[in-house]
Length: 141
Length: 310
Image (cartoon, rainbow over all chains, first blue to last red; front, side, top):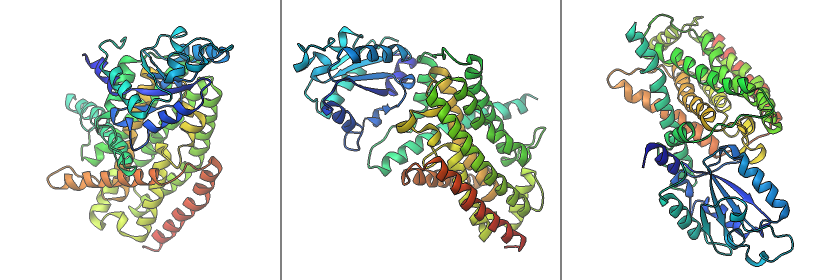
């Protein structure tokens, strides 16, 4: 693992994209940033601008309106960017998979690096997913 | 000649300031985490952030906006921070190669980073960035007058001299300036000025993350943002050391005095971090009122006290 890869993995900045979410996954993501779970000890930081982001967290079912916005956000992000689909809706579509306005799970729209299933996933599951993402050999750098 | 260049580039110049500033920024994040009962990132986290932004990330240029200004602004911010740091640290550590800085040059150089943030933000062509730039402008208008009054008071205390060396000498003879009532008042005001210059809570309205998404820096990415980060880390070291020099009796690095110097810097950083973690972000009009009325009043009281020899 070279210096570039090491520094990238030690300092992942997160950007949070909520689709048509029921807000449970959003709450669990915010739980990860609270003192009890504290993902900042891995160097992760929630940033407000997509230009600073290294990881795009996507949750909630993606409907036809969200699809355009998700694509725009993805193209605005500086590469390399990792995409994490969080929750049953992000991974597969969940109960909305056969809905009229559903525009496909996240990986049909943009490439996804990690999936964290659950409805909603516990903060422990999100941290486990993050650790798996960090241990992946190729992060595309 | 080569030795002078080493002073400027290695110690106490660019590399030393960057490393120390990065460590102090890491300490700031660690202290913040401890205050919130978290574990927090490692102390060298700012270096990971900087290297990641510099080496790994792509730099995106604005489609509508001035690309040259957008890219030149971080370079000038870094240059301004480095030059002001050298002007402050060379006399402080008793090296005098060539020009020995006076306090008005330092005042101008310390203002450069904030001005370049404004220029870069206005060149980005983003409405939120221009909002951040306008707030930064108003903030500069409010704190620079107070900062200038502090410098005037320090010059009066040191016996009408503007050379950093003479100010340090005056404090060696009559004791650090903070040992008097006027000195304590000046120190309180200077801490708030440093807070505003560093753009930390309660004066971080120019880059309010939760409100206008990093404001002035919203469009920066990759190596351009890395330079801005480096300039910010360096200011984190430069401004506390400037406070040390003009009020706390200088920074000596020989023998046992080095411990005192480190304790002074760490004390100021601790104070700044405590203020930043126990206060909410205030509105820009509240900040202007705070500096124009209350802080200026405190400095003027201090100046009157100095005239009476207190």
